[in-house]
Length: 378
Image 1 (cartoon, rainbow, N blue to C red):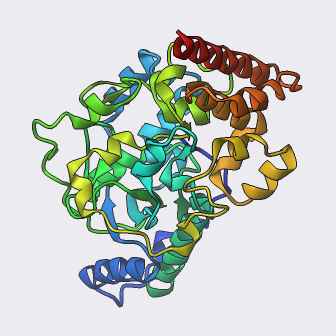
Image 2 (tube, rainbow, N blue to C red):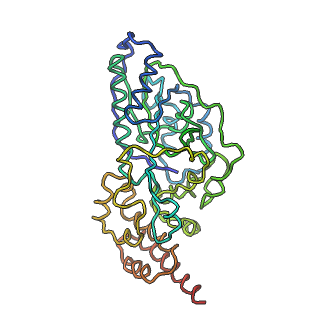
């Protein structure tokens, strides 16, 4: 599950429908838009209107149940998320795009089964996707403008209050699965989403007629913290992606042992999904792992100084959680690892860290290591 909302400036040009160039037919334009999208590295482009009335009540109910945890921005921006024209006036169509991100040879199973390693969600192994995708969408919009005249648009990639998964579902890019991620029958779910809001009266695509999850509940059963509390309903407060990325305070005690060695995000619900047998590896080199983060040693990561952290996460989505939360997450993973004198020494060295948040999780991890020692000794 992915929770990431970096604030990145989006391109905006004033709307002016009178400038539309009518020399190109609508069907030809739609065909060109999808072809141009593929040339820019997107695997699929879909188009939909702005009516999200089917999704808005569900979103409001989710917020009312406080399942969003500390992500107050979702509640504050609920109206704009549910009404695209409130976010960008005059919007009548949304171009939705998806781009594969799963890098090849990332040893997923090997890392999760080795408690001395740290597991990082596969989307975060390379460069930050926000800027790359928004720039590609901006290039797509400019190409559309070149063919039709100077129209208004605004490009987003997780950079504004946008209901990206409902929009993508309406645009025909897939269906929202029981784990609340978007699934495509030919590509699984390992992809990013991005949008172009526009006032161009484009023909819309037909959405997927229904969910194709069937009776499968594999994602619900495998979730380490049981965050998927019902089909199509996620309690973000229990989700490891939320706990390791969005949460800035202490991780609840009862959830720490369930996190295993997952130090940034979690992919379990995608790993188990049978539709991901159709997933394709990314062709984008920027999404390939950097600094050996596909299979990192926990103790090596825990030894990073703050300068190391800033240097090795430059241009990465990981940097947004900050150094203290990085150490917090790794401390939990070390606490969950089998007893080790090396781990105990590394944790003890962090007991006087300036951050109370780090110290609290280091103390907990040491207690776990001591318990493991006593259990082993008995």
